[in-house]
Image (tube, rainbow over all chains, first blue to last red; front, top):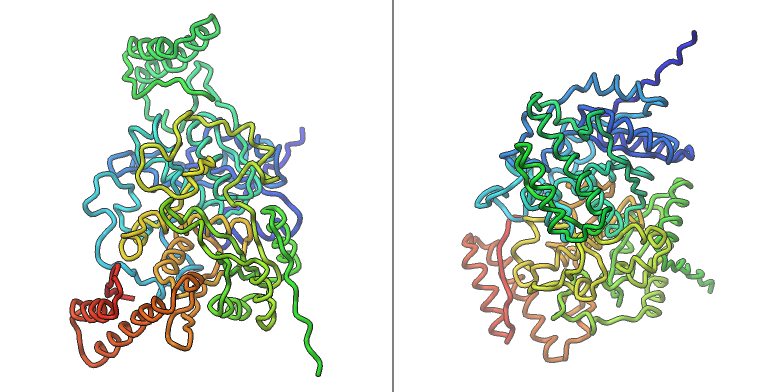
Length: 291
Length: 291
């Protein structure tokens, strides 16, 4: 039996190095797909990589837990990570990936070779006051006062749905994706439909800011029991996992009810909420939207 | 006498065409400088072009009055323009420019060849409500409801100084510069120090969003009488122009006073305000800032 050697990805931690890699590949006529992740990879990510293979010659996976999308009260410090395991997982995807971009801190401009030489010029014109002072909700980037102050806002789509309980979450997502786009300079980027609002926000952002990047959406991957796979699932106890299954069951029920003629979105929402609450879940929101 | 033939710039109106031009040049090993303008060019712009020549092989000037930085109550409709005159002016700069990017409307995604094919996918997930509804100050982009909803905010530097009386101005500037950067993909971009806060905002934005673009600042150009050259000066009557001269005079006075030992920024501000008001001017703000 002949085993095919698994491709080992190039691991790149420096922004300039990453850009240099992409530009060299582009000069060779290769197209590049980016799959942005926060690591702790699972089958959902593998499916994004497989999707990426269909659309470009080379695949880059970024692994970077983004402090810009966590508020100080959220779970940045306990977000799961396993970098070596991630690399093995990427190598086990047929075709593998060509490069992994794993920056130490995307918001630390002092330790980046490109910007350090310009640092003397960047004396704050408005001095003293910290961005985090006198504000309620800020992200972990502002809490650490790294000097970062530019944020990309997709002003309509970032409101509502997940934006209600996490008002600065999508600001952080749109901003870090912009940074990754500017560093990796891909032709294509792949996002999962599990994070549906995020995907639509990135779509609008790419159009509005004239990025020359095609956004590909990839279908939700579920475990055998129906639960959508997610890095955070590792935190669930057996009991909690059981409760969580009520989400996909409730959505399937509502889908069936709509198919059978239920036209009231209020009734459909009620069906979802009651179904989840009966299983012991607490519903943040349930909404019916035009796709 | 032998006259050197003046270089005629390539005029590009389409986003994709512009990007294609830049990428072809880059593949030929050429570096590109961008000089973003709103047209009605004067010696200030010529000096930006001359500065650009020092830093890159090729120079692109964009001419585009940006509705995103005008509020509906501002002077978008009367902003001066003279495209043919602008081209002649650019041709008269020694060395000329290589391309002029003159898009019809940077925010009209329906009429852009690149995005039109994706339009079916971009059904608004949040339906109905117009961005301009229920809001006080919006830009002319939102007033026209073009669907554009992504804005780049440089959250600390956009506040104060000119940001006080024009709260959404720098949002519009940062956003259109991002768009131009993504379309032209330059190596270098040149901004005038006349718009000092704008220059510093672009500097922060480039660092924070990881654009691989070097920002060059160019010195203020003044007419013989001391007035900083500006496209809007064309609107000044003889009387108003005389009043306007009090600005540079007042600043020179304050500079001298500081040199002579005046250390109170309050006193320096007062000196500027009184000096301009005495000449019949109305001061929006005068502030002393760390550079």
